[in-house]
Length: 384
Image 1 (cartoon, rainbow, N blue to C red):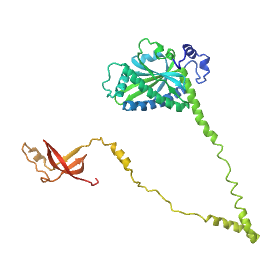
Image 2 (image 1 turned 135 degrees about the vertical axis):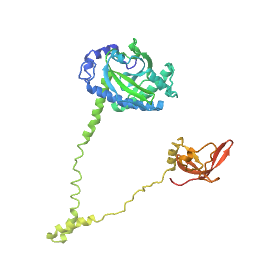
Image 3 (image 1 turned 90 degrees about the vertical axis):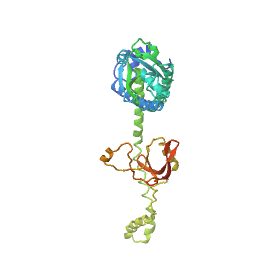
Image 4 (image 1 turned 90 degrees about the horizontal axis):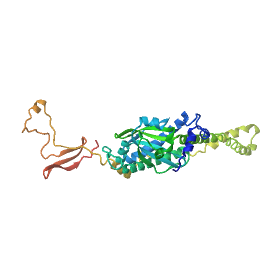
């Protein structure tokens, strides 16, 4: 498989041989990560999954929240003790910028809900079985999500990062699994990054992202070098600031001018004309009134129309008031079928049309086939 390490190379990395110690990223032996490397992997995963959550939101049209990750080094046996259920494994291979691959693990029910939302469903009644159509849909979703994550990763590592199309497979973690079906790095220790993912009110679950140890160390090395490169340029730009250039130039220019006028005066008065010429030269100042911009710019009718279009589908309560009256509790208790209640409005007088408790129009009652209707006769233009 493209970008895969051979089993011999993995065994060499996990056996604390020369290849593992030459990287210099970890202070510990074997394949374990130190605290700095875990923090770096957590930061990288947090930024990448934040971008992936935004992409998933556009696919399912539901609010997607992926929380801060938890980074741990584990083995396959330890992980399956807490996560033994049918899951969908998505294998992502890096084809540029990074050498290696990682694996995303989603629960089967979560995949059914996500793919149902992608296909226009409401996610409440997903398919009982996971079909090839669901696998194809989740691969497309992961392709877009991890593609956007690769873009964020490129900016963090200062290099172009690209992925191959993901491959998905339904696997029962409790059974015997051939490592070649998922990835060869699950034979030993690997990095397990756990996230909590919520999608609207439909999904509140856990997803996992698995990294091989050597890929995690490579990411840490590139991430650390990228941070050093971003910190160094401000230090190099600091020395040019204290350059004494403007001080010596203006001083000799005003000196020759008073020297041409002073031979006509006594030497005892030489200091006085020089002191009087400078303020007179400063009096030639061009003074203008400040022009301020108008605080009430004319509204753009095009923008107003676009804002109104955003709320065109909002439902409003429309009621028609024929009239009102006040009755005491005693009079109300005397109501019976056939009782006539007199309103405070004459027959034929315009009635009120109220929208959300606001008077907006006047009208008259009409009959449309077998239903009552209102014919608008006047629009109320007063500002409420």
